[in-house]
Image (cartoon, rainbow, N blue to C red):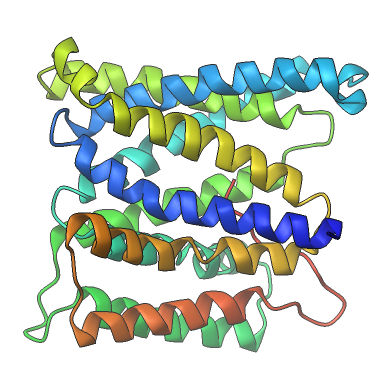
Length: 300
């Protein structure tokens, strides 16, 4: 099996995990509030990445001899953690009032939101990206705006969270080479966990016994989604064209709909399905390489 095929399989596995993680995020909130859930999931994810990093330090030559800037690593970890806190908690809250599949597809629009943000900061964007932004907006309209022109307030929360996810990815993309990427992710997870529990104490009733009731969902999202899937993505992008990798990772939105249908009995009507298809087309076309460019967009 070629390295590229292995990487494709790894990314497809990560996309499946991320898509089905929305199911765990919904079912976990039958026991705990969204802020408490995020406190637990990111605490577990941070601890898991500590374990992963130490395994890599012992087994992979690159990590054994790695030299990095601790100050820059902490700086980027904290900044990304602040953005992740807002984005993830808004997304988690939105799952109280809208379907997991819809959240998955709306979240995927970060791929076209990023160049739009860059445009407002003076970066020129191609006609193809402008077209993708337009058709993505059409998809969002079909997916979220009802025929009477009303919109679910929880869908608005998702779209606001997407803005923070897009900025988060842009910050991660500027992370210099002398930052340790696993440690940046670990720090951002712990920052998100700490801030989420502070907010939970202010706005939710916290009962330890309820955390134990949600342990399956917390462990799945914390270890499998945040830990293993992130690690698969990180390793896979070393041996695959970034554009192809990003396209495979984009299938997360498709698996979120499949997972919601199988496990949550959440079904979409024809209008919503049409919106999903249009958004998927927009995100795929947006990631196709321009002339002389092969860099794609990734989630982690």
